[in-house]
View 1: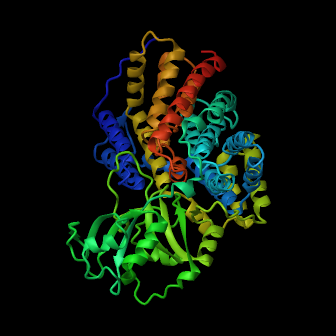
View 2 (view 1 turned 60 degrees about the vertical axis):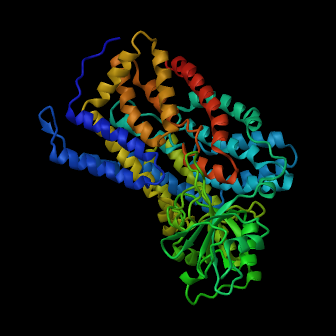
View 3 (view 1 turned 90 degrees about the vertical axis):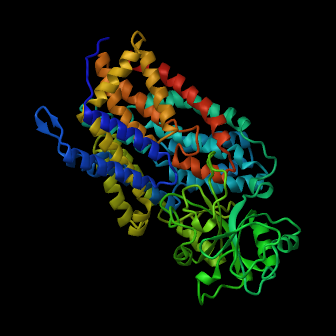
Length: 609
């Protein structure tokens, strides 16, 4: 194998430094993903504008870093996300889930396999998120009725959807991006089912592992999750003027609850934080930060004369009678009205007809302290305890704005479901046969969904994730900068030199493993977009077919199994399944190793390396 000597310049080094910084920022939950993505784009534009860079004597136009907004892959991704929203809204995929629920009562082991195969197939053509959103309440309901642990099959379902997404070029946004970059660079035009054979061969082994082994690795809870291990919510109890706690010491208030209530903080006014001394005297308006189950929170509210919301923030508001209200837990999903908004934003709760009481965070290992509920910026996977009338909660379920964790309520079946399925079949059929590019067919499909009444424009607006769009554009811009500065070739040459003497299949295998590790730390889309040009350059320097190296990036970047923040559906499952970070490691790491070994064998055989 031969490599050419490539010397990095100042621009190339700056681009690599920016990429490393961006990948670090993408892992920071406190910084919104859209903010860090926008910052990357702005820095590239400013840097290449004020510090011009010539390629063969021609200055690089900074405007090319904005072309990602019109990228064909991004159009296809957004269109397919909207189509997935239509399937979710109309309940078009519900019959499969309902049949699985019926079979579960007869043959649980066979039902689990059927569910895994069903979501595996569906996720090849539909975005993973609506599938997971559809299945979560069904699985919770099954767990309650059959007295099973929901943790035994919630995570397996999520893992199966991710594997299924690998089997076609439209299965995930990662696939579409890798395919689009490969086409733009003139390497290959990968058709919808060109990646299906290796993905199905290796994915089938992964499904067997998920079916037979993963449930044994997960926590064994004999009773349903909701009955035996209710979620603990971070809440604020605001002392009422006529409440028992006014003028009482903290010790007296705790004694009133038989010492069952644990107070984390006492807040007075906007900024004052009181010491948790037993002798501290409480006043009206003081807020006690506590953590407990919904049932206990309501009990404490009554016992000490407090409210789980600050009525002072809602002057003149008339609350319905207590008998007309009920508590519910809702899971925050990307694109929902509460996503990335603060708990203290009363306008949001009012618009939904709900009172936001407390939050259960989708915790990561580094989080040790309980947040102050009012300051919490909600993210995908968080569970919010709300209070509202039966009518408001029923409207929330039927409108599908957010996922209500209520397994006893059937999902709505709407008369437009058949239309949505017909449009989906039309999109897939025209793209699979080559009649239309997937970007065109999916875009037309969005129009048909709107015209046929499966979606309205509000649904379209809510379903488009700004954070994902900006992340994709930023990733494409970084990938473009790698190419124009020659750093893609330089990094590829470094990788090839480091692997000097290894057989081609071993180098390919190393690429898969590197991408698999990276995708569980940062965004799978960012990992794929940055890795694709490097993989292509490496294959060209090795003088082999670049296509298997492209697929190594594609499959590796999809292996986001080992961390709850590796993929957006993992966060939903983390909360509703009652899992911990270690559960993802125990189930996900062996699955990564299985798929890594499988693709390391299958890809060289299929492509004759």
